[in-house]
Length: 185
Length: 73
Image (cartoon, helix red, strand yellow):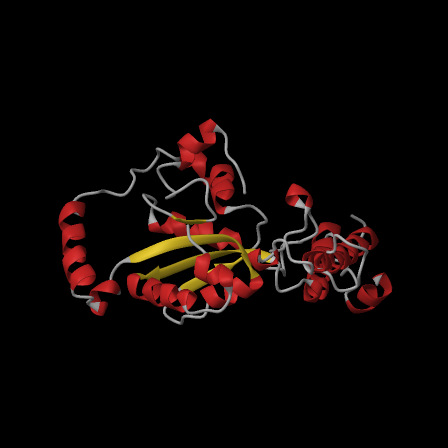
């Protein structure tokens, strides 16, 4: 999980609902900024909070953050009409930008199944997966495999196999490297 | 591989070398992404309404994949 310095945390804190988890919402930002941040997701290897620090944070303070006028009254109304009565038509009226980072491809399919929401995902068409942050290629190891005898076979920690996850990522990296060298850089 | 791409994507005389290299890179990514396993991690941005998120939570709770059921922020 990505970590941030104290200074970075100070900059990020007003705009993200948490700084330590992979799932977080964007708050107190203009709609156009939230949209632009998500738009960068598809072609960037960076996390959303890192993208914000690198590309948007220098403008923090230039524009006022979202107003909180009427929030207390609105929350009470939502509590009653949505929380108590379950009124779906009211549930449709509030929107949230939510980031889910480090989700496996299988999980992204579940996240993106519903037709009522809009999605944007980091694209394997633009982002190479040849790096190894924290010493491992970027793939998910299911918790069910913890302590399981098949785990080494799954991740490729045992003797090299053709179809373990490390081998697949290594092949991906080799193809990219070959193309890069043959294209001259 | 170079022969393959050179035959199909030669650098146009009026295109810069950098632009051509970017084209080759995109084709390399496109060619090799099929090797990536379903466990490959990605980042997803979602914009939706309360109704959409309610449906998402119900869908995840009912899903057999343990990570869906236990995923929490």
